[in-house]
Length: 187
Image (cartoon, rainbow, N blue to C red; front, side, top):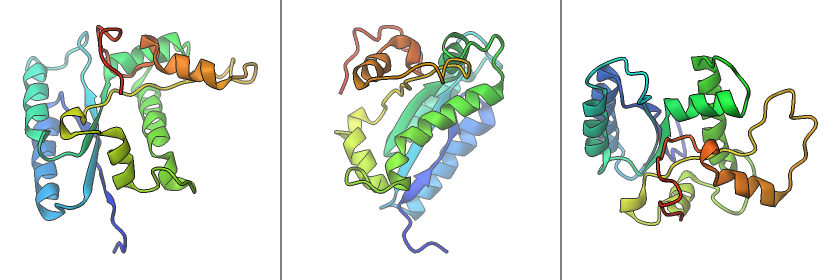
């Protein structure tokens, strides 16, 4: 089937009962069957303002705990932060799941660009994980996306590298709601 399997991408929603529990079991089975392959996990945490279930916080904590020895890198994303980016940066008054999913897909696509295009740095999934995760304790990076502009502004603006890097570290471009971003550490 596949001559050069590098690893697995497992998009995982931690809030729901079936997604968090069954997803955890599937990841454990993948890890047992393919011990030497990378498991790259974009994790979607539920919104803290719009809860669909009273057990969402428990599901998130349990899923995070049970994934700690199985997954090589977990990109931390949350629905509420993605909604805020859609509203504030893309000027969408009432974002839908389609808008949020496109934004998250763009973010994950940006993280794996070197897998699709010829490059000397991070050309395999193992190298990407090695460059993102310095030690096993730091395998939970938060994701930021820049430049993010609405369709009506994209043809009128040009960007220099300094502006893009500055925007990456602004809290309004981070796709995980981290309350005290200024007090947290950057790698």
